[in-house]
Image (tube, rainbow, N blue to C red; front, side, top):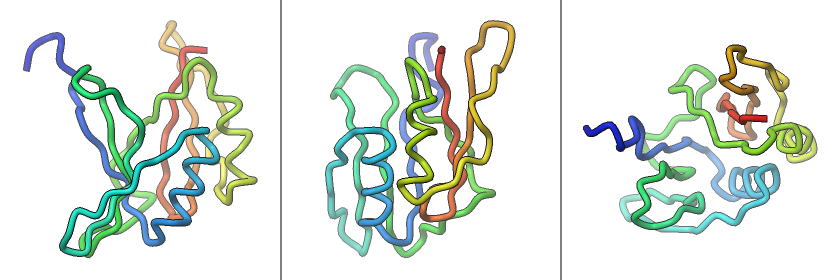
Length: 128
């Protein structure tokens, strides 16, 4: 891995109900997810990304081996420039704010956590 590469290049958020999860994430992040049937009972809803730019991307994933969990891998979604509007939409979209916007300190920005409609705890990070 070179210094210019991201330590993470892909993430998947496991879901039980792909339609419900898609609606939740589209509502709180104000984005459109793209549906993909991967075969073998695996369905994904892809987060928006720019091809070939080296940025991290990911998807909601429903499949036989995907089990949502509050104790699973911790991911942080980009909530720049300010996560407050995203956290403000979580409850109305069917989720729960677990940690409000919190200053990390030392100029590292802010973090917050929510539980999505599938039971996953997901982090947010923003600079402001």
